[in-house]
Image (cartoon, rainbow, N blue to C red; front, side):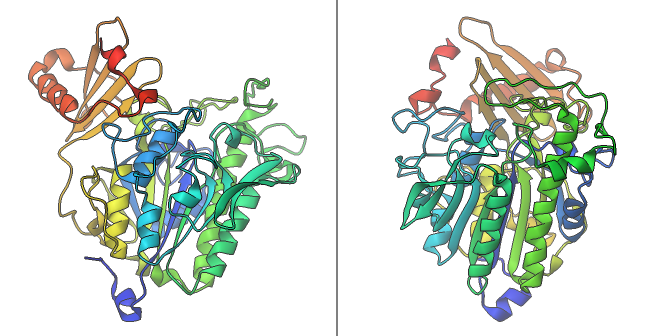
Length: 459
């Protein structure tokens, strides 16, 4: 049953859903989560004041595509089809026809659906193309590698019901083009229920911003406000950047400004009492293209970054602004994760969720109540350069490392006593290790997708 507010019940209008997803933004890069952050984020701070700050929210994975798969489908990495980043190969890196997404569910319930930004779950010729996964409108990048290029000559758009390549003026910053399309979508659908999925590409590398944005973080003589700077030389997908600290700060600030644009538009259109706004990140902070997560304390008090299963790689900021500002200003430590978003939004909108997914609805939290049911444990899996697995139950966390032909390594942390995961207490708590290890085996099934088959690693 839908959890509508009083204002929504009176208007009999289903709530709008806006889900904003940053790319590789660390927990410590949002000032309302880390007061010592060097980068101002006034719009996100204001959103936090008007909403609920969730301090133990987890991404679906520690890299892009699988995390987004968990978000869209409601499955953990123990059961998902896409369990890692991969180039399209025979469609295996894309969602399948049977992989039902949040957008498909909402569209089936009368919602206009739009996505603007980075998809990462299927190219234009695959079964995972945006027009086949529930989106009426889309504009942006299909592939995560392409999304490193902020001055590209092409993007993709749904035109005539199909996802097609469209030309782009290479002098235009794509973040601006994407946000403008999102604004147009809101304006066009303001009189009907809509789902706006806004997976923005900043602040992921490459570290590049328009000159006028970079100047905000430079002194009058053009030097960086964040010395010392170590210039980054072009490598792979990432272009050179003389001032990576200043550029990264400008990208986070740009993200904050764009969030402010969306929130201001909702208020201007009088949609405050009809709209849920979610803001989070797809995984922990990166150190690619010259990014410096240590300098910016991007992981906050947590250990690790992107590609780690320590908290810094998977714990991400979550802000939810509910209609009527219900429970505004609250700080909620309840643990939940990306795979819970689909059923949570489903309950908020009166939309049925697929059966047998891993996610649970946490919609009561968004009105300041306790969740009706919570998870017994949380599980992650990451299979680049060997296999990493993590499982949390309460305050305990077990991390497993295994590569082909090697002896597995197990680390155990008590997050309540050691939030920075500095003290491995596995040897002192063998019974806890045994219990969590058994749950770890229970939490997963062999991957159906051969691209992410870890059976050889297990041997």
